[in-house]
Length: 202
Length: 370
Image (cartoon, each protein chain N blue to C red):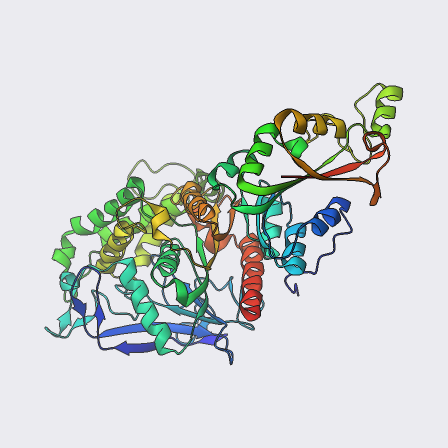
């Protein structure tokens, strides 16, 4: 018989691990595109955060709620408008920036609604993506970008340097950067060697 | 789980419309055990034509409860863990004082002398019952449709008395369309000459009017898709049309059967009073400002709506969720996929169970930790 909430570890998603380390105990946290709520559940349990989540997929939000996460079914692009300024200490957008319709608007709203924003995304500048494009001449399919071109939730493709440029151009203060190859932190040539980037803005 | 309906008695209850009702009797059932800390009690609030018999098998009739698929050992409202209570609403006709009850002033049934009651009055009576049972702070109040309205009213009237609230397939106030359907039902009853201004207890009830009202109700509880699947254009025990006004189609036969069956178990005057209470219900007391209705409290909310429910459409639930979010309230919300229309919360319960079970479990654990 199903026992209810399963304990959660964050090893499945390396960016979750970094995010989990960044957030101090007792914070108010909003996770945009929270999926099945594993990150929020972990934060609630280990860091005693006040956790809220938004997720557009009915199947996933159901699992998040069943985990005990206060998640509601809704659209990120529209949902942020309802929150007052600085309603949260941290607003998280993990591996979802490339799926939102208006990434710039979402980032601006995140920094309005939260004191800080945490954004993670797969790096389109990674050498494997470049090699796939160069040698195959076709839409790259790698571990990080596994979808067929016609069946992908990703509507934007950005490299780490693209994000750095965006933040500079629009005045988003970057407090910290973390680059991951698999679950390993790297510091050398991130735009080429980094698979996942985690930025702390604010 | 064999259950017997119990009864509680109160001297009087003060009503929102002014005046009091004295005395008052409440029919209720309980399932499971109240724990030592008195922290595991859940109140289930029934919908329009529901009653106290929410779960288990009735001792006298052998009938299962109306939410037996959600309440019981190992189910969404797990009676191995929680103490579950369900009572018949004020104005009802299944054991709680209503228009068919005896008026002590006259020795005859109230009829239309029964005062017009509201959802808030129903909830006030439930609070009296809960206090009488010595339950302490309720872990949860949960219900669908009119039951969802009661759950919302609990959150607004007694926020400190309940840890979490689960309003399902419901609204914070009736729209014009919802009022319109209720009015058709009422008019059908009142147009039946046997209704006789509510004085029919000595003669015969307005069976035809009540049956037609119920037929309309059944249509609103289903969806176009579910009716197509269930009936389509199938003929009832015929090969060809009858070219008369008897029953041709399966759906006609179903509606006639359901309408007639309803008359045997529900009082026509109760129909009038309960639909009126639904139409009067407004969480904002007429201001339309939902944000003012909820005080900033730590009550958790799980709001559920169903995609094919056109009687209580999802936008109404989403309005509540939006307001709670703006207040930084603790709200979870899911719009469950179903083809069953408004009936879904009663019949399409697999995903609903998953949501409720997890939500209750986490609320109970937060409550223990606090």
